[in-house]
Each structure stands twice: as structure tokens, then as C-alpha cells.
Length: 320
Image 1 (cartoon, helix red, strand yellow):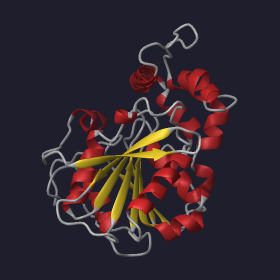
Image 2: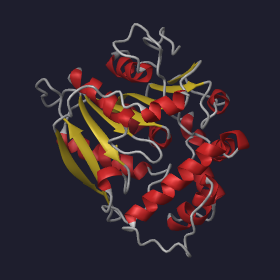
Image 3: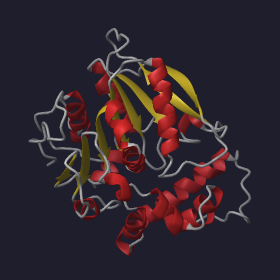
Image 4: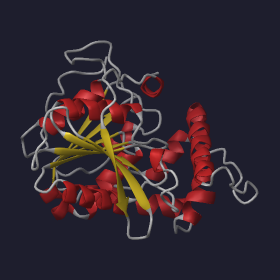
């Protein structure tokens, strides 16, 4: 229910922000679209910035991304919403597919933001698949990341891709497996302007089928298993030096909390598993927060903290 609430209720009550669309040119010739949201109050060079990376099938327009960006802007933080390759308004700008291991895309976005905002403190947030990208990037270049990023948060990240695919493929969660497979295929069709050869690329029924027949061969991997092993964040998580929070929920139907609880985490990472919240839902019945979107306020609290450790902050409130 939490997962469905998060997907069906936008929760966006503030006016649409005035945004600037910026192109991030990558070394392989592809291009990403970065949405630059300036805060309501005057923002000056050197002030804080945040980068938000959406999840599977999402974009800069995903409700949770827009809600959190609006809250950060109201606190005076310039926010950049990244569209992964071919997603959202970035459709048609990239020849290659996005996937869970595209840390080079995040690196390209960060370099562009450094150019636009020299001297600014960076806060980094990733959601679902975007959370895996964030954690993998932090672990692949730990010293550099610790110098650039004040704090990071990953919400419901699939850090062991094979295990997460197995979990979503179980009969009880078959609806989600079919839904995401269909959604990914629809995104692929849109990137081909509806001219995708269905004989060469037949519609998959499951995520693993999509990854085996489309993701892996089109992005340089031998198989879905090779893709999962190469792109999972789990192997590099212990190397992360940046103060980081991983937020999960005990009732997440897509990314089982046990996968995260089994990780050997460094002192730089704090894992919080809420009793409920589903997958990117976290809709509370009422709390001390200004609205019921519990996840949004935890991201805000984490980014606003001036502490330089991973000690939890403002997590007394629980999703109920």
C-alpha cells in the first residue's frame, strides 16, 4: 500500500518552479538533461547545492523528486534534478541506455554543477536505482567524493541487483515485475520513436528478461548476471568515506531490507530501516513534520545537518 501511495499521490502543492534546462555532454557523445532549480530566495555563488537522481522508470518529474526539490529550494538550496539517459525530457538526447551502474553519468553531472556553482557544498541524493548509482559512485572514488560531497542519502537502493531481481520475481510480487518490465520496454520504444523491431526485441514479461535481452547486450555486458555483478554497489560500499544515510523500509516489496541489513557497513554509513514505507512511499498518518511525506523531511534533515559524521539526525519520527 505504501508503494502504491507513493506512486499515485503526487503531494506537490507548491507552484511549479522556474527552472533552467542544462545539457550535460558525456565522453561517449551522449547527452543528459539536468534541471536546475534556483531557490525562491536569492542564491549566491558558494551556497549549498543538491543533486537528486531518480529511480527505475522515473525522471526529474517523478513526484518524489519534485516534492523534495521544492522543499530544498524553500530552504535556500539550489537543486539539480538529473534525468538519466533517455529519461523524461531527456528523451532523444542519448543513443545508449541508462542502467544501475552509470556512475560516469553522475560524474558528468557533478562536473557540470561544479562549473556552474564553484565553491558550493554538494549534497547528493539517489532513489531506488539512482540510490545504487550514488552509492557506487561514492565507493568508486572515495577520497574525491569525500572532498566534494558534504552528505549523501540513498533511499531503497538495490545494492545487490541479482538478489533484488530475484525478490521482485517471486510470485507474490509478480505484479511489480510485470509492471516494471512493461514500463522499461515502453521507455525503450519511446527512445526509438515507436519504431522498435519487436521481432528483434520482443516485449519482456519480467525485469530479468529485459536485462538479459536488452540491457546487457546493448550496454556491453555478457549477460544479465554479468550486468548485475558489475553494476551492484554492494562490493564498493565499505570503501565509502562520505557521511551517508541509507534509508529502507521493512515492507519494501522490491528491495528487501534484509539485503541492506546484511551489508558490512563502514562507520561513514548509517542504515535506517523504517517499520513501514514501502518502496519510495513513506506516507505517514501524521507526525511532527509539516506534511505527511516522511521521506522528504528525512532527506531535508540529513542535508541540513552540519555534522561531519554519519550519526543519524531527526529520525525520531517514524512512518506510522
